[in-house]
Structures are given as C-alpha cells and as structure tokens.
Amino acid sequence: MKRLVVLGCTGSVGKQTIEVVHRHKERYKVVGLAAGSSWEEVARQAELLEPERIAMSDSQAAARLREALAASPRTSAIEVLEGDDGVLDIACMQADMAMI
Image (cartoon, rainbow, N blue to C red):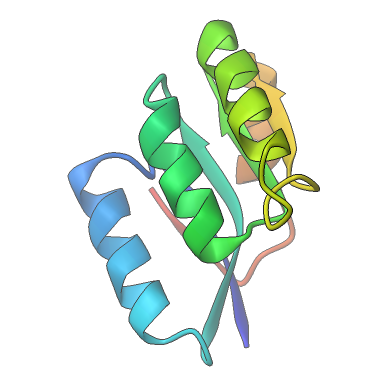
C-alpha cells in the first residue's frame, strides 16, 4: 500500500486526488492532509480517509477542525497541526508520494 500526503487538499487537484484514492483504498493510504482555511471540507475528507495528521495554515480553522474531529470516534485521534510549521510537518512526513 502506498502512503500519500496531499498538500492543498481542498483545491481542485487535491479533491481529484482524494476521489482517486477513495476509489482505490486497497492501493493508497492518505497519511497527511494540508489546507488553508476550509476546515469543513477537510473534516469531510478526514472522515472519509482517516489520515494520521492534518495541518491547517489558518490557526482559527485548525481550532474549528479540532473541535469537529473530536466529536467523531472515527476522527478523534487525528492530530491537527497549524501554521506554516504544521504544513511543513505534513510535507516532511514519511510517505511514498506527495500531491501538491
């Protein structure tokens, strides 16, 4: 199984990548997601993919995402990072592939 990180997961390329990965769950595992401020879209993606970590460059969006993920047993263990350092952490995760 290929490990994948998706930077810009709420953009058009990111959304298309998520669709492909979801259709081929047996081949890919998304381990990290990164986005700017669209925390609601990222919460939906987290429910679908259950990554290890997510980074939001916007601190307020990160706080809202943490609350949303904590409310679901499927996503409560996902680590939420914030700011440029958080996005950098996602970019540097051990993965086989990165979509940017």
